[in-house]
Image (cartoon, rainbow, N blue to C red):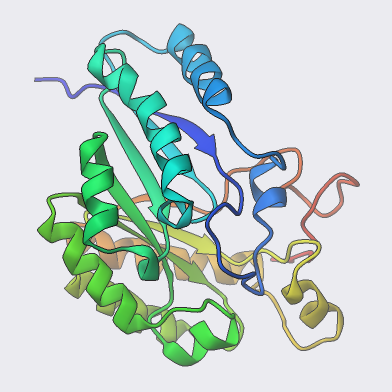
Length: 264
């Protein structure tokens, strides 16, 4: 039997719910969106995508950017309820959200379950506490373990996002992170090589010579090794690298928010 095509309807909530600025992060640049999302815009986005998607396909609304479960509860419910209406009328199949490991608890999970969320992706980035602290993530590997176990216990599909080339992170550190994540049994993983983005602390470190980004070849080789590692463990790698946009593109483009020019 042929598997249905799976389409994501992306809705970006840049920097909502985040308690701090990680050294590498500028969600407004990454998402290309600066204004606060409303239920009207959620409806508009879903409707626009539904016009072009095949009726028989599997459709999933995904709230990306920021830390969804860190948003005030009323705002979470507003966004979730808007998307959930499309589940109830059979126009979409499920919802997924991305968030921080330290913003997962029983009450938050009960709320997500109520509104048809199927998948929760955790921004892990690394399981090395020194590297997490260096990047000002504000959470620990212990938070990752607790959140992952709780998510699976409540019946959600667990996803992990990890980064490659973080300050002071080595190839061995990243392989160790992958080994740690496998033990937590995610269904899916995303791999993100670090980009040096404008208006971040990492930009200052790069300009001062305190941080050297991976070359294209290094990033490809590390992603390739991790891809094979996760695949052998029957964990699906659903993305490698940020999606190219008008802002996230070659530094040679004057509109690009990417600073560092990586050379193969």
